Amino acid sequence: MKEELEIWEKTSDVDLITLIQKANTGRELFSANLMEILEIIKTRRSIRRFQSKEIEKEKLAKLVEALIWAPSAGNLQARKFYFVFNKESKEKLAMAASDQKFITQAPLVVVGCTDDEIEWKYGERGKTVYSICDVAMSVQNMMLLAVEQGLGTCPVGAFDEKEVKEILNLPKNLRPIIIVPVGYPAHKPSAPSRVSKEKVVEFIK
Ligand SMILES: Cc1cc2nc3c(=O)[nH]c(=O)nc-3n(C[C@H](O)[C@H](O)[C@H](O)COP(=O)(O)O)c2cc1C
Image (cartoon, rainbow, N blue to C red; front, side, top):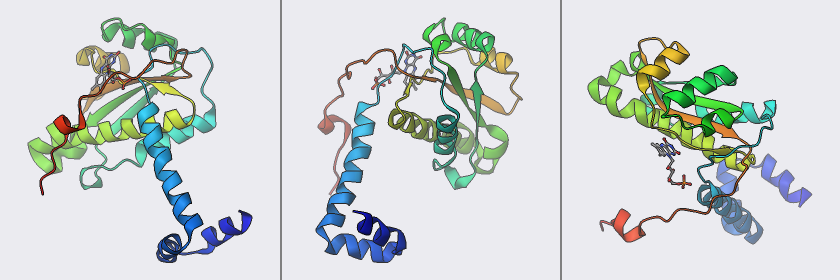
């Protein structure tokens, strides 16, 4: 195994692909990684009860990495994230979100915002579509990384935008899109059903 890892580290990407195609061990390693990603996607659940345990600094740093490495339209990255730890601010955010109290329970509450000033380049569509996609892709990255780190999250979209802007004292160009409480889960919800693949996806050949 040690030898395999050394080969892995020394080999260029192109060689690596050939190596994977040639060697059974490589193929297995490759498909094992793909399985893990799908597993993370499928095991992620919206968590609405959290332990009081704080999130370690190293894990916070990884959440930030996951946010910033998401794709964005024209790589403009028209998004900004607030990491709220302060109890009073979290309580106010929960109130602004129709009093969804579980938001207060989480040690960290992330607020994802679009930035109109950055997205001006793509006109109306940039403002109303691209920037929201930018934020959503970042947040999904972060939520999946959270699962891998043993953390739970829940995207919260039901809130009063004006109130959230006031609580965080946001500049005019920032629009809050999603609130995401993050913390160690205190429950294990079962998976809500999904509509059939046939209904959601149509293959055009
Ligand atoms: C855009 C968006 C807004 C949401 N808003 C809320 C919300 O305000 N409160 C809440 O408890 N869950 C909210 N959710 C979570 C959904 O209820 C949840 O994703 C859905 O029921 C599927 O469950 P799962 O995430 O465990 O797969 C939201 C999800 C999305 C994507």
